[in-house]
Length: 269
View 1 (cartoon, rainbow, N blue to C red):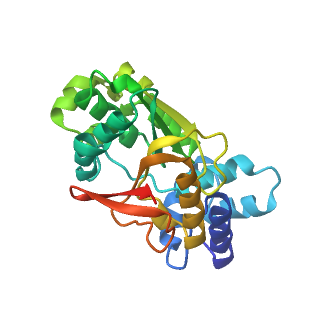
View 2: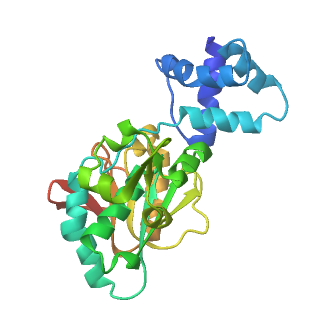
């Protein structure tokens, strides 16, 4: 991949997804886009990018490129400790403060669905009589990864990563294609396509928002824009959860860190 084509891809991903790719990421682009070039029968990655640059009507292919370069690393009950804090303190406090109506949860950048499905299983286990009071919305920028998430179908390696064995037995059925999550859990999550770097349009108010391990890919202005919009969507006393390496500090001073167990949540000041 020549330097000019690498710059074109960096500009495309920055413009469409606010993901910052810099010098030294050529290997990542080549690894992720090699399969796209092969699927579309281009003889090389440079040929694919030249087509993007100069041919008309390449929007579907551009979207496929952005999808391919979006990091989709996830697993069930990722990091464990936040889910313990949710079960023991965060969710009980939300139920106690909001005795009527739905309690709204948003799993942003949900990738292939392990996070929102983990939440749905946790609610069913910890609050069986009140699980239907919670409504989970899960979003991602990638149409292809959302298609996978909606299917609720996972391979052996995926269910081996973080999913407790009793949950696998209770909530999944083994099929020739993989492990299928049951219909009750699958239907409890509403998957939608949302680009976090764009304005959030038509979004409801939320009691709990998770945006984990995605802010690190954005520059400071985009992080500030996202946090401002999240802050405006959170109800008073609502919670925000970021990834372990992420923080609102020095980015948006409208949040206050709250340590719960071994995890840090954020509430609107």
